[in-house]
Length: 622
Image (cartoon, rainbow, N blue to C red; front, side, top):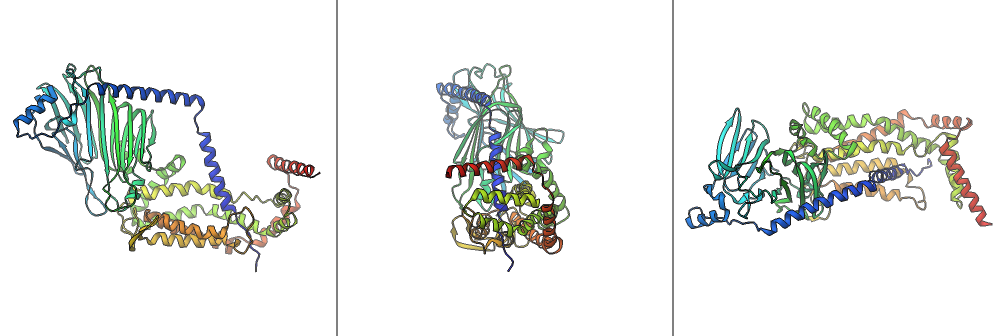
């Protein structure tokens, strides 16, 4: 039987990848000067927050209880509590504001959106997709009045007035102090758009609002569940925001509670996986206190909400009046839609991935898949894209297999060296490097393909779970390529696996098993070397980990890995049987050995270091 060898290039590749990521982490650490500047800025923000809190505590908010509007005494008490704003007639009810794609209801009490529904989308169980419903969201301004009251607009009644501006519908909600003195929320909705222009302004209130006290915008929301797997949906549900002149940051998707204080905030996105509620401002918020609380601890069909978001941002008066131009976005987290608002940069709220990975995802895979799916069924488009990606990477696969073949040819010499110097690790390494150098073979060359494929691997890992184009698109037995497929419901829940069996992860696990058997199975008959990973254990563990990990992931992602591994297996078989000739490789190596090989600086330095270490070791023995 042909002698086998231990292939560790994959392990070395992953170690190198980890090392590079660690190096990049330390390289990107802020300098001491930057840390000092950040600390000073953070102290400034915290001081402003403490000041605002102390000023608010001096005059407690006049909380307004729900009143019975048919009870004249209750109405009189309400007007006494809110002071000058009692001029507004207190009437219950909502006003509908809608276009072809978006339906909103704005309540008289609070003047805020109490229902936001998208007309073209439904949840996994065919219920309309709501982002705001049944009190899951609250928006308001907290401010002080000249007679020392602290009010919140969520407790005030507004008078609605609907008009049009061309094809746009305009809703004005006014909380009045007098007929020509008021606080106004102005909503303007355009045809076929998810973006609603939103203006908060006051008129004639410079003597009513206490300008020496803070005016705070408050926006709270609990994300409504839409997907089959609440844990999977929650993984891509995050508070994302634009701040510090264009920086994009996110609060944690998994921590129980995450809080941040930021400056120069342009927009805030309460993302709920495939749908987002976004508040953008033309003038930026000078500071903002942000928080996100995780509401999902385990997989359950009874959980209704995923995360609880909160924002507190002070508003600046202009000439004693409020004037803030903003925008509400209630719609899909879809790059095709969000790119319509380039001036606001809302597409940056989509989790394409970090750095170069996100760039590849956004500008290569997303448009490429959009093109394919425009004329192909969505599942077929995934298969075609996978085939083309693997073919594009086939030269990398060829280089990897060529490196394996060269190492295989050198295996008898390496084994002889290992046996000869089995008790001298330093000498064994020196002689091994000499053989590689004479033969013109680099043991690290097999790691380069792994590094080259890393950006592709990670980009596609982020693409499939977040691609809106895959949402609720069926293929074969999968009802939704953006969610897991189910071929069997379990009567119990298996930890880390779930309460169902998905077929695509099983197929992907089988494919990766045979792929690893081709690349690492050659080591099965070898005696395990000390300090080296047990390749047999890894070969069996990896498919099992994939099976568990991807059982609750997007079926489109499992489909990609299944097809990708199949294609890689076929490419490697073709390279082995029809392209590479081991006899020719052996002959070429022998020719390389005959040629004088000039050491480069790195090789010479490594040789000298090992020789010095060997000399020191001998001296120590004496």
